[in-house]
Image (tube, rainbow, N blue to C red; front, side, top):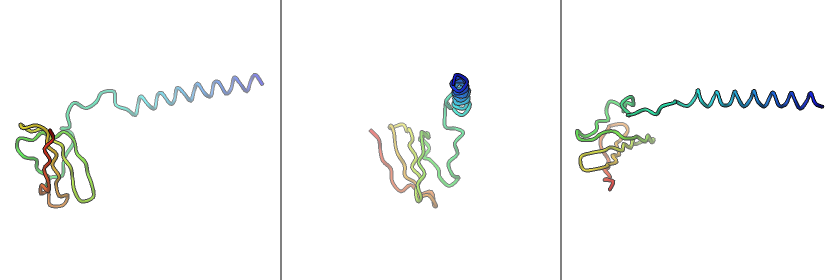
Length: 91
């Protein structure tokens, strides 16, 4: 009985160490500072004064949150043509 408890304890400790190792290795240690490494499709062009903040991809549209000189704006682009379908000003 004592061997069984000791074996289970060792297995649990090894499993816990493996779990911690996987969590550390799978999650990046530092968050990216900008979204510059993220590329929008070539036919989606932001207005000149807009800086990309985040994106949302749907079946027939692409949503882009951006910072502008006037504040935050959410653009909804047509996924195929790249036209701005709607602009929502975020106050």
